[in-house]
Image (tube, rainbow over all chains, first blue to last red):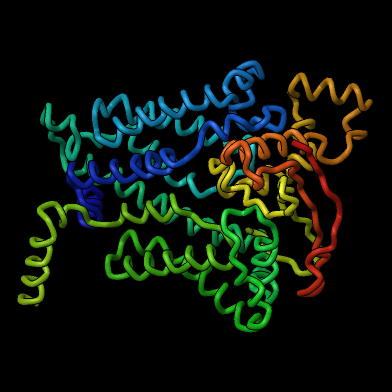
Length: 300
Length: 134
């Protein structure tokens, strides 16, 4: 019965899981390709604060790694692994090496800065993909050797990743309510926070729209409340397709608003919205999709 | 973010600036220097100002030496490693420009300001500055 429900709400084909592998690994590949590792390696090791498991590595290791040349080499290894896992070559191995290398890279970044959650969702998805048959289709491996499994084997990981996306937002609403309670809906919450994030030039963008917010602060508790409700309702996007595009559409607007009003953006998290697309319906191109829609309308 | 904003709470923030050979003072967006640290640069700077790398269980040998020189962590001035960070950023900035360019930096500095809170004005009360000649 559980299998039946899962197969009904998420696509259950090797093709769909293969496309998701390409999206998740490709997102990291794209962002890392445009990142200067030699600049990162120029930062002084003496400001590093190893976090979590990174604490177990000796300082001599960081001394060796934290140089422009060593960081460029690290980037080359990371890009090679991500290229192979994105393309689906030796997928069983390369999805795991990509996961390990990305987790290490993210740990290094967090040892300089704070625990930023933009990439975390995508890292969890890398972990799911590392232990599921995501190379059975839409991959170089599948061209070399055909493997078929029950639909459940492909549907379950996609459902898990969709639930992770939903949990990210749902838990975010819960924690806001737990930490701040109803104070989170105060008129000064959003303007004070947004202005603080717009004062320096150390954020990635320097939009100044936040300074307009105090003029409309009486209306802002409604906007903040609407965002809280949206976050709490996000799990509906997993189980009800009718709600899905409204919830994801609101998410795009929300993340663009945080960019323009708070200079905070979540590109990796937004890319994970693509996991909600029913890739099976796009398998044979948009023409089949259009035909299917026409048929549905005719038989309604 | 989880606790939301509080108008009554004052906050400090920093602006990264460069002094060019031609005599201009320019704002330098840090993201253009170390884009790997997107979304994190401001927290890295805050942690460096707060000497957090000196408050670890296992401290870097060079930082341990500095603690010995000052006679204890509590005696370190704020941002004792900020000049090292500024040196790295200054070098990265100058590397992008030709050797004779008047836009190259002769110094780079981090200016700290404070918004005391309580009202939506007076955002830029100067606190202190760290400067590194290049």
